[in-house]
Image (cartoon, rainbow, N blue to C red; front, side, top):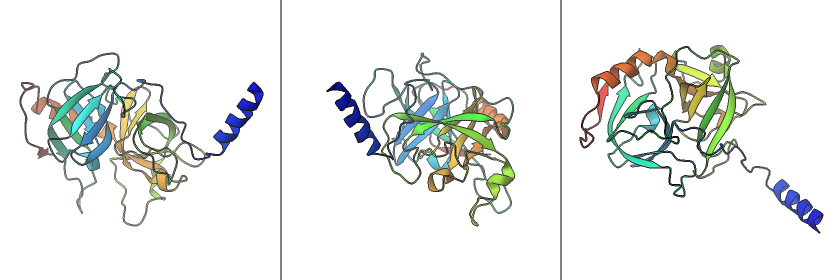
Length: 258
């Protein structure tokens, strides 16, 4: 009888070939941030107890956006979460210009500092740039199956190889131009889709990218594109110094800086 139950269970599992099994080990990515509310539903990375980074398309558009830290399953309360209102949004500019590279990067200042715990920890900025063939981890919420929608629930993790720039650029549609601020990861026969804006790419324990274009979710043979964080260390540190810690109760309007 027990054997029959096992066979039936395996048969039912086989009936759902698109089921997504890439769930992360809970709280294994303590730097991961879930941005939600105010028209935003994205991932981001905690780099300091006051600061979060994400891609330009994930920039909060109102003060009602919340940064949730210590999350795994965003549909339930696990007792590990910290929900902090967004205070200030600073875009790297120009984001899109005929004469300038694209810069898909936004820094978000929290209305109060994150309380660092085993579930909430910042990720170090990169000290070197990722190299083709290097293996990295990407985490976010949403489907990891190409061309399949899945609502945000448990955090997903995939493993991706860094792809050389020319190989990646060759897959671009005509309307998209290569930028030195891009780095690509994922290819045929590897994990390649994380259907969640701003998904976080970590290589060798350092933050190397936030997702920019989810090409691998439309065509599994195409690399997905990430903002190349190693090119932005100076700008990130300048922003944190310029807009340094203020009183936790201060709420500031969004601003743009270069």
